[in-house]
Length: 237
Ligand code: PXP
Image (tube, rainbow, N blue to C red; front, side):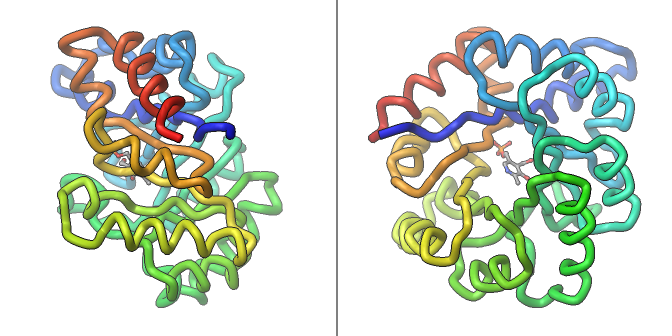
């Protein structure tokens, strides 16, 4: 059985760079190192407040790599225009609140149908594979399918925090993606210790992992961290 692809999220390389305002460490160089170590794609989140990734990073990344780029973005007019101009392989629509530390909770696809429908259509018309970052909830999955998103990324944050029943919820949601015609991705808060049960879910085609890998890179280097995560994913099923 084929195992899920690994998308490495480089946001926190930019967080570290921005702490000093210069150019080092460069998230684009980190992306190249992650790909050389076996990552299947690169994920980055251009936030409205540009707190880590900046517009210039997206442009430089697109010029530097040929592997798939997954652009995480809020459902705003500005971001749709940026995505349609940059044409990444995929765009993952995430909820965004300025005060949050990271993406807390999934997108309310069911509650925002009228905003999301035209926006998803524009991204799709630009040839971008649209994914919706949602909680593992049947209502949200059905809304994603109704909105014409080909992909959902299931939010694994509550599972990563150890919330009771959350793995079962993810497994049930993943099992629903096939019948709904959705490709299933997952991510948020995944580590060496918790990735394997998620990677073993047969429907999961891609995992997007960032913060933990960049943290491990401090101790053992990014190539090692990516190789080890990939090994865990490849041996989970
Ligand atoms: N997937 C999505 C949609 C996200 O917003 C994030 C966080 O930016 C991730 C995956 C990666 O989460 P983490 O950095 O906790 O691995």
